[in-house]
Amino acid sequence: MEEISKGLERIGLTSNEAQVYLTLLKHGTCKVGKISKISQINRTTTYDVLKRLLDKGLIGYVVKGKVKYFEVSNPNQLKDFVDEKKFEVIKLLPSLEKIYKTPEEKHNVTLYYGYHGVKSIFEDFLRNTKVHYLMDSEGKFSERMPYFAKHFVRQLEKKKIKIKHLVREGRDVHQSKTTEVRYIKKKIASEAVFDIYNDKVAIIIWTDPPEGVVIQNKAVADSLKEYFDILWKHSSKI
Image (cartoon, rainbow, N blue to C red; front, side):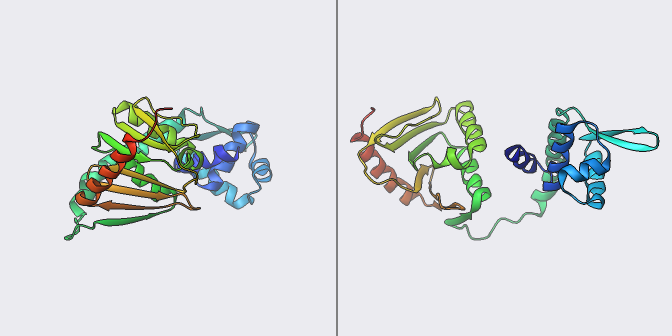
């Protein structure tokens, strides 16, 4: 339930909204007092949360003897809720792009912090890139960001993005259909992953929270690509 609650928060619900929504989903039609007790949210806040969920179209209510009994709408309504947000973003983009000012000087090094920052790096991987040269991070991506990792693999396959993936011997790799894996002799596990794509080099360090660095420099990318090719030639397929 905790993981489901976090998922609801990721699509735009607050922590309290997710808690009340799950309470109704699990316990069915309830009065405010019961919802407040089960959710462990004070009664006044519960009223506010219910109003917001009603506005989002995620719950409804029936009246029995002047008392409101709240209940969850069909969970498929969540998809409509997300689609509506996406539609609003699409409408806003032209106005936002008019306001947006491109930096006069292009930054060659960009730092990213936390899971949202690292997610931005992986999303950049998927844009206008046909080949990646990847040196592994001991499976930390799928371990730390399991839901996004599955989405990432699906997008690799959909866009037919080719991956050349070097990993440490003995590692069990769950790769995409577009990934070719080779193994190198390496005793020490690494907390960092290196990715070379286009004119960029990305370094992701799986600390908690994770951090990332993206270097946009063709000379650096080409040099590391040559180093990668040497390792690739001396690696094994099994």
